[in-house]
Amino acid sequence: MPSLTKLCGYFPAARLGWMEDTPRGVALAWSRSHARFEDTFEHAPIACSPSQRQALVSRFASLRAPILAASVTDDPFGTVSAIERLLRYFTCSDSIHLRIAPAAIGVRSIGHFAFFHSRFETRLWPIALGWLRTGQLAAATRPRTTDPPILASPTHVDSAPPEEPMNAPFEHRYAYTNGIRMHYVEYGEGPLVLLCHGWPESWYSWRHQIEALAAAGYRVVAPDQRGYADTEAPLETASYDIANLTGDLVELVNALGETQAILVGHDWGSVVAATAALLRPDLFRALALFSVPYLPRGRIRPAVHLQTSATDKHFYQEYFQQPGRVERELEEDIRRSLLGIYYTAAGESRRHPEHRQRGFIGFDKNARFVDSLAYPDTLPDWLSADDLDVFAAQFAKSGFRGTIDWYRNLDRNWALTPFLDGARILQPTLFIAGEADGVIHIMAKAYERLESNVPHLAKKVLIPEAGHWIQQERPAEVNALLLEFLADPAVQQAMA
Image (cartoon, rainbow, N blue to C red):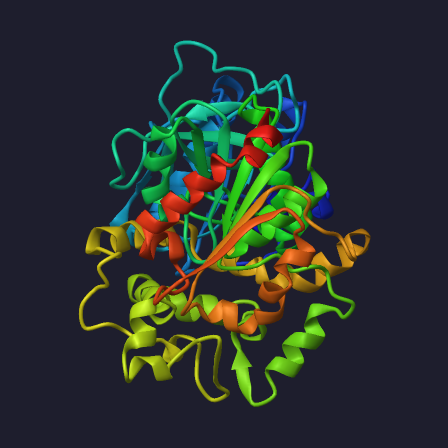
């Protein structure tokens, strides 16, 4: 097989960002000239006959869809569904399908692939090319009877049907934000409330809040954040730094046509929401943080804390730093891994006489992360089998790599934000957590100092016997507290 760098030799390696030893990846590039690509494919030593090559060049010149280059290898990481999803990403079409010859390669043996897309050309819609290896891989594209809309800006919004069982009233859409395509769920009309999930979750973790907030007169938007579920997962670890994560929220609000919003964050979503509120107080007028209190920037870089926290045991954030290690563990059995994480950090586990002895915040140096998890005899009341299936299906699509890369930017985030040293959140703010949440114990000082670090803190609440997944474990109490906060005169004035 030809190498992808040879196949795409007209693009500088720095622009492609492609690594031959990377098991999966997406690279972006663009060109104004069709002839360049024709010449590339005319002379590239690809495994196609001259007639097949000419057919590809003709298709490339005539279709208005994405450019696809894929190499068929024995790499076990790639899947047909993943490539199909990425094809649909570039075409905004559900009529894109891959045809695989199972007898030739097996339906799960599609490996390295790359996509080239003219997204950065505002007047040029992506043009299609399928690169085929004889008898093994083909891309089928629905002919377009009319031109697709021009990508006039990176915040073009389009709708998409859900791919998993969801509540019927919710609208599933995509927006182009900060260089990625972001999936989000929307419901209701009124002032915008943006719900930001944590790890390892998705928009679905807000399923109990979306309807309650919409019924109270709010436009509710819950995105899959960068690297999660149906939102794009860039290859570069640095793509998941705090500048990009907050930029995603800013551009999502702009794409929605709004000029202000209320931010609600849980876990990592709380960290991103707090930073966004600091950086754009004109846009984010009020704030609700769940589980993770506001953490002012410290004087010592996070890597030092990780090292000191992992002297006797692994600290999970330190364990996550090695690329690929925890991802391989979690992806051995995605559904079981998620069940273990959800249950181990939930209130039910902390009340169990044996399971309370287990935990992944700190675990034995000779153990793996997944070996530290506890598993219930029966599912907790707040997590049904269908709920677990939804989360498992979402992580089967996205994998864990992008979601873990958030943790690999802790030092980078610190280095990028010296100007936030000593910053206080001045917007009206609510804080809610579970009394049995392990995060509260390891961030006790930040919790105690909330009143000084957040002068306009409306309330901070610890819900008895609840664990980390507070909005899922105690939806009625969380919804009541959240609606009470939104009705607060200070919040109403901030949004006026």
